[in-house]
Length: 167
Image (cartoon, rainbow, N blue to C red; front, side, top):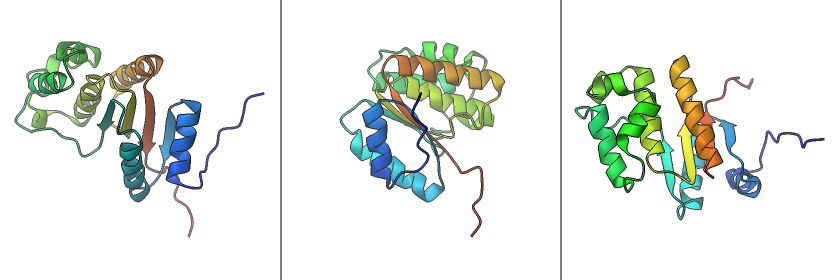
């Protein structure tokens, strides 16, 4: 018999402790305030690991193209993952020369994930990982997440609460 999934934690640190103890990725539904506290706690806790963060507010420089943006971050990450590989994996070839400001919501979300993939992270915090993606984008994202987890990366996927509590 498998253990039941824990749905509540006494604190953010308890949640991160559980994530570290199990070595598993976690899906967390919470509000913006708790999400900000979770992000800060994760940054502190995993500061000595190769970390990457794909956050809602990460838009890049609007005048950069997809290719130039990912090329820059590939170099910053040490170049182990070539930016062209990320462009191909995330289905961004057709928009590689498009400026970030001209991308649609799904394409922007894919660029954030493609950027995160360049760092070959040990830990990755992703806000709303699938929320803005179309079907092909979800497939590319889930494939990368599965491959990264197999390589040892642990994720915290954060989404906003889907059910509003009565007060």
